[in-house]
Each structure stands twice: as structure tokens, then as C-alpha cells.
Length: 165
Image (cartoon, rainbow, N blue to C red; front, side, top):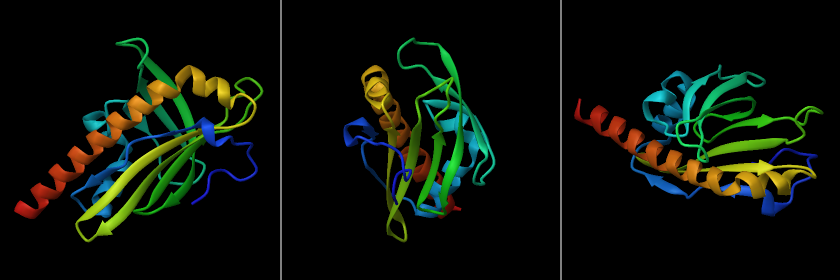
């Protein structure tokens, strides 16, 4: 897996979540990550999400602000990579009116039939990448760590329920 080809990326402008090991199959984690309508039930950062699982589809999100408690921010990015049970990515392309291109990768690493690991990155590209990183890098890291821990809890609960049934 590689970040967007042809983009000017300084490795210092990449936010990385903690890597969490999850006691659930990669298939369950994939199911959760691609059930966009259910994000509001488990994700503390992306509290609402609407999309289709296809390249180029808009990912319409409502994000909890980590700088202004109680504030919700609308965000739209576009699915740019799909590798079932391994990777889903979306990106914000460079636009003259918003010159802050970025790409988010959510990575699933199978560790066995009933275990996997998850982490997420957000890469800020181009000349403005350093400015985005300075402005929001710390809170994006916190938001992604919160999301990773919530995903772990959700996946393990679903896996446990299915094994018990």
C-alpha cells in the first residue's frame, strides 16, 4: 500500500493512530468500517457518515470537533482505495478554493483467523501540508486514537456475540 502517487509528501506531515490489536477477524472489522450508516453507533470522531463502497464515491461526514467541544464539522472526501479486509482510503483532492490535499488510510492487518490489527493514517500533501499538520495534527491524532479504540471495542463485542449465538 502506498500513499497517493505523484503528491508532494513530507513524512513529517503524516498523522498515525496507535496500532490496536483486535480479538476479532479482519472480516468483522471490514464490515464495521464499510457500514457507513452505523458510524454514529460507535465512532466518537466521525459521528455520522454516508457513502457507497466504490472508488470515487463521496464520503459525507460529520466530525466531532476536538478543538471546540460540542461543535460538529461537515467534511466531504472521496474513496480512492478499496482492498477488502485490508484497506479503505479516502482523500481530499487539491482544489484552488481549498488547497489542502490529504489522504486517510484505514489499515487492517490480519493476524490469524480470529485476530487482526488496525491503524489509521492521515497524510497532508503539498506546500500547505506543514500548516495543516501544525494546526490540526495533534487533535487528528487524538481523534484517530479514539476511533481505533472504539473500533476495537465494537469489533470484539460483535465477534463475542456471534460466537455465543
